[in-house]
Length: 427
Image (cartoon, rainbow, N blue to C red; front, top):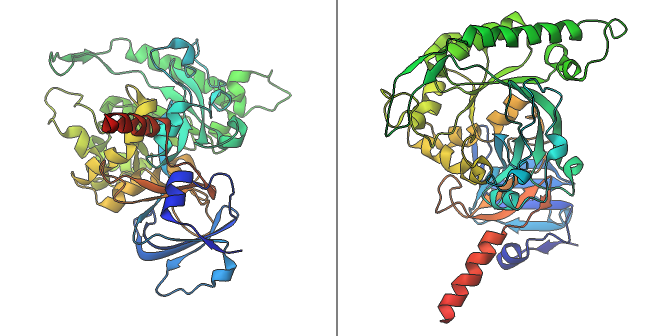
C-alpha cells in the first residue's frame, strides 16, 4: 500500500514505529558526497540499500513500486557525516570520571577495544545525530598505543547492533619532537624534546616485536594478546593511526611506516603536513586533519592558520578528511558540519567540504564501499535538511535515515527548549 508522508508527520512523529521497506525520495537537491550534485534528485531505497539515484525530470518511476514516497521540494540531501577519531559514545560527562571509558592504564594497549565500551544509550549521541552526524569512529585515548578503534552507527539496540566495522585500526600517540610553548595569551618558545630519540626507540622496538610475531608460524610463538592485536596491521587491512602534528613527527612517521611495512598508515592531526608537500603526497598517507575551530600552534602562525589547513592540504594533493578531536569532543561532534563550513570560506568548495566529512573519512577508514556517499548499492545512511547543512542557521534536519530506518529528528535539548519557550510565552 502506497502512502505519502506529510511534513507534519515527519517532523513531529519521525516515523520511528512503522518502518517502510521501499522508500522513494523525490525532487530534493542531492549532494552526492563525491563532489557531484543532482538537482530534482530521485533516490530509491529498498531494504536499507540505495537502489536508484537519478534526476526525477528524466527518470520516470511507478508509484506502485514504493510503499513510501516523500516529495522534498528542493530540500538538501546529504550522506551521513562521519565523526572520525572521536570519543563519542565512550564518554557522557567529561568532568565525571566514572562516565569516561576511553583511557586504560599502561603504555602499550593495542588489544584494548572501544567497540564493547560504546554506549548506544548515550544522551550526547542524540544531540549529535540531529545535526547530520550519523557515524563515528569510537577511538581510545592515552598511553603510547591507546588501543583499537571501531566504526559505529549512531543508532542501534546495543554495541553489537551499532557496529559497522569492528577493530578498524590501532592508535599510536607519536612522541612529540618539541616541548614547552604557551597558550595564545602567554606565548613562549618551544624547544627540542631531549627524550625524543629514546621514546622513538621504545616504539620502534615494540613494532619490531609485533612484526616478528605476525610473520612467525603459530606453533613457533606463544600467544600474546597485545601482539596478536597488531597482526592485521602488517598482514591485513587494519589501519595504524599515528597521532602527530609537527613536521618532524610526520616526516618520521613516513619513514617508520616504510620501515615496518605497514599497509595502511594514517596521520591524525597533521597540523604541519602541508609543509612536507610532494613528499607527503607521494607517500599516499592520508591525513585526518585536526579540529579547524582552534587557535594556531605556533606563535608566528597567522591567526586563521587552522581555518586554511584543508585548502593547503588540497593544494598540495594530500589525501585528507576533517575531524573534531579536542576539548569536549563528544558533545562538540555536533559542530563537525560547521567546521567544514568554515573551510568553504578559506578555499574549499562546498562539495569538497562535504566530501571531507563524508566520503573522505570513509575511504581512509576502509568503509567507502557501503558508506560516505549517496550512490547505488550503498547503505541508505543519509539526511535531508531544510537548508545548507554546513551553516548553523540552516542545518535543520527534516528527515534522517540510518541503514534505511527513520530516526527521530528531535532530541531532549530541543524538547527542553520548546518546553521553556512555551512557559515564558504564556507568562
